[in-house]
Length: 424
Image (cartoon, rainbow, N blue to C red; front, side):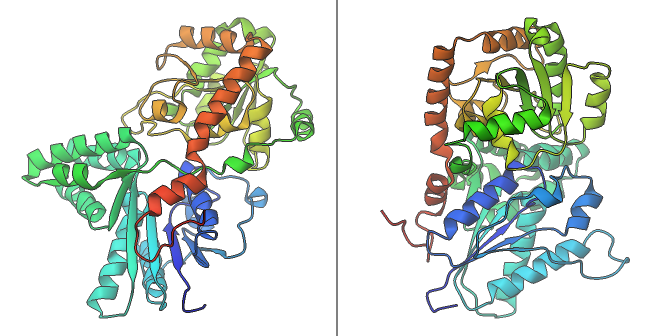
């Protein structure tokens, strides 16, 4: 590397995990190559560790390649069976120490506070305590499940130390961001509860320091779609353009696939439009049981990154009827943005969490878990005349372009040391 080399490290649950932040990490990494970074690393978990965790994964042989200059690292575990849970985390932390001390300026971004921000903060503490030469700037991105899954659980069980540790780790970073205004408000609210219980002052610090940085989406993958490619992809699946309603997301209880199946059965569109449930996740088995015997429902668990925009473009409507649950609240809705960029039929969703920030005024909205309203929304969407549908699609795409990865990258990295301004 030259004297002007710059390294970007993104610590994240990367591909093949079905997660919006895997998509975001890819997008930011690709843009970084055009913004003066010549060494971009995505530091993540070994495939076998992801499989053992039971995470929903994409087909391994159908992942999109990264550009030259982006290296995906999966550090192996350190220690033997006597270190039951910390082996992979120590491997991750150790590799970060090595990357921080490579003699070039580094920006390191973590997505998810626990455990990724922990690894970054521990690695940087090691570097500084050991007196090693390093020029490192850190960014920590918090998501809703950092709060709903970790902090709320800690508060409910009286485990205040863990909650305090999470906020301390978050605020130890140079730049703290949240994926939506809803997420920031949620973090401040839960930090205030920790403050009341512990006598700390996290809420004021979070409110003052946390910035909103929306997830980065590669708009280019979803615009300019070849109609012939759509027709070919649909034919391979036994589908027809504008003759199916699409759910394409992680199949989890909070995503509302069960509500969608019930609403589809009750809709007038049931006889004319199939329902496609595309994705995998913890609720897939029970969702299949819920739809058992219904030949109008098609499950697809092997959709590749290349096929996803084609299915989105060809559908009569895309539905993500997300609903808040104790373990998960939709804090943005990357799939909704991807659908609006892809064109095709309208989006049907709810005003849960950060979804309004993702869709603006460009979705048919229903109340969470309102199956009757969802059935009506399906019928409205599939009966829309072509002119209205095209107009809605164009306005939705124009709105969604604000989340393109280049714009998000430039806003996120603006003003950071050693990060050059984008070329006009």
